[in-house]
Length: 126
Image 1 (cartoon, rainbow, N blue to C red):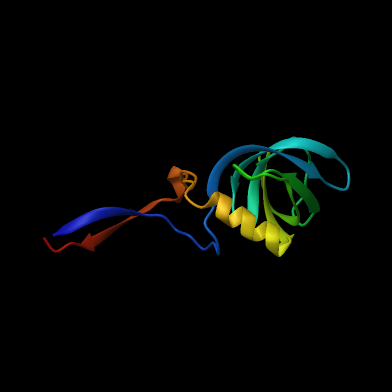
Image 2 (cartoon, rainbow, N blue to C red):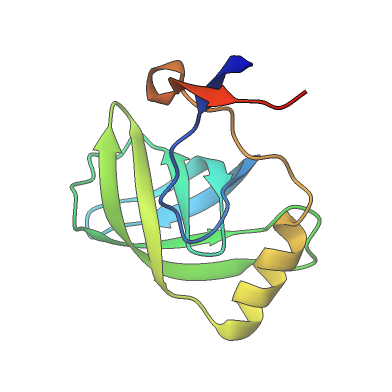
């Protein structure tokens, strides 16, 4: 029997996790307290009031969920859209990366945007 299923495309190297936590975001022209919307050991999606540009270097400092201490990571702004930036970490200490990965384990991923879903027909044996 043929069934319709929604396909969620993913080309990420690590799973993003839905979080809601504060962070300090330092760029070349501002130091601001912002909100992290989702997080992985390789990057973050951040709601910001700063006018950041793609390719800009930033320093993010935040406390991962249920962690005893702050983590700092250097990153590059990879995506910019309407007050939300995607930051890819390029400098994160190994101990911080392991701590972050363990603290994120078990948290759900963010809900996908409806526009990114596509449907396919798949054969299901009953």
